[in-house]
Image 1 (cartoon, rainbow, N blue to C red):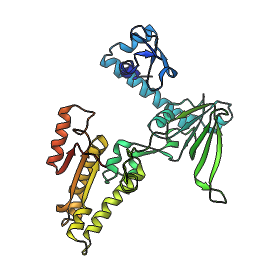
Image 2 (image 1 turned 30 degrees about the vertical axis):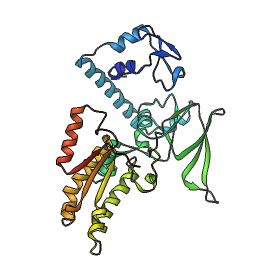
Image 3 (image 1 turned 90 degrees about the horizontal axis):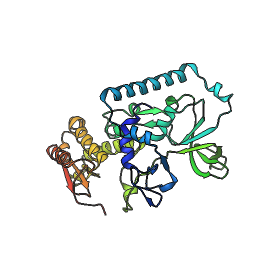
Image 4 (image 1 turned 90 degrees about the vertical axis):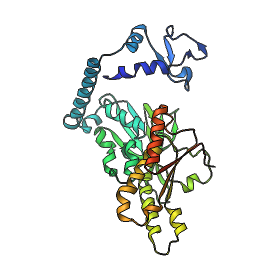
Length: 336
């Protein structure tokens, strides 16, 4: 597909310097390891011709044409699905069933590009939409609405079959996914269970938030992983201001309620801290003018600096911007 060339160099650099346990030179390897985590179980065959194509520099014109061709192909495929192909036509065909677990980034991308006339695609997930997570921090303070950052998974591909359920086990021997409904229960109040046979299985369920075993985090902290987290966070921020605004609330209690601590100096933590400060200055200053002077926003980071994925100049610039906007940045401290 168009645009693949942009990632060729990165794929080659990611390829492990060995095959299984045998060290090899990069220019001699015909089979390289794409991810050391999987070892020789996940080999990628690269011939001399493919290697030459991987390492070839592309001009701007070539990249533009590849991207244009890829976009045109995607548009044509979606128009074909929407106006010329029907799910009833697929049900008459005996196609191998591909079961896809999840509706996140990987699953959504696969749903978009899968050829429904080669596979009978069934998607299983407790969430019936794809969430554009980079805008999650903005939605948690109302900068954008929740409906603006989601896409129903059925809208992504009208020809798939979607089941709102969770997969709790996989029978690899008999090629079955064991699922349970997230909404439907039986007469005894137990979640309805069903089996979904497959010919091919793709697991793209993502990961859960890591609390690093810190006591009390799961019970008391607010996360920013999905849209329900963003809703709870927005409600909690407003609730803190409403409690602090009550006449019987003491000054010390008001300061406690209006002290917001963001743990984690990565992209998500920094983005939310900035969005929160904008929300406080822009909206809540008008509604709670007497309380805004008591508000404190702190960003805690265990490392030596924030945004460690980026270069030092950008890290320092971010710290200075935070300080100038009233956000206290604390580095080198961990939550116990």
